Length: 255
Image (cartoon, rainbow, N blue to C red; front, side, top):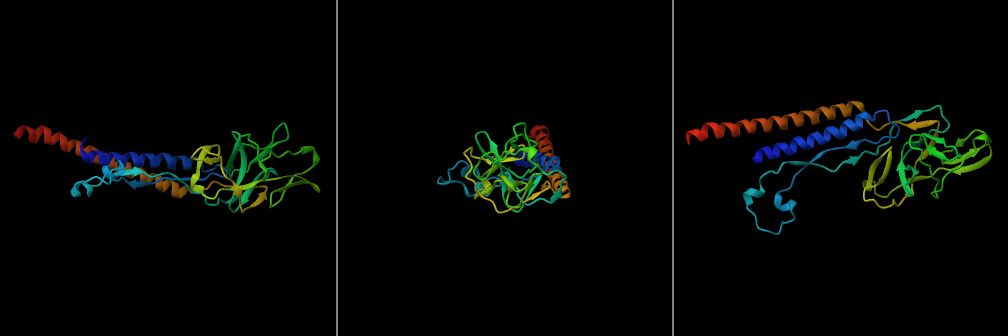
């Protein structure tokens, strides 16, 4: 394939990948606790570097040629979303750092979605997933709805009247770059191993939810920029195709 077409194709594919990620962000504008993806590009290294052959000799001129771009590894923007008032006593937001600890496939996942409820067994669960919410010791939380109003304090203590009935766990990890989205607002380790959870440092707010971290205007502008970049690269592919056609069908005949 023509080298210029390869470079333009890599730019188009990277921009289309950006569009997909950014469109997913915009689709979750109203999802409580949603954290947007930051999608970008990076320069592609030379073939010698990419194949791990840096010790071999190479032509200096070839090493100076650009190799196009690649999609950079997606990052998650964990910035605090706005705290919004709710009418449900089972809705809880985290003001500050940390995550709710959610039971997940025999282990734990993290989430900022604090829309909770009780299942038929009286277990505190996420309303959207039905997964149990865990306490600091990774145990499920049981609440008897017949014992009166539930109060959730800033430190996570759950009381009904003067009786303490449970404690919300507030967890975090030392390095958030290991976290990846698992769907349903959950975060797990990108390496597939159990999370090593440490204490978070936020405060719980009852009758509240955390809004999506997506900024609508920024997301729309980023999607437009990615779209223009993709169109520009596709235009370059078309131009180089026409140049090759002219070279073969015009100058080839003259020769």
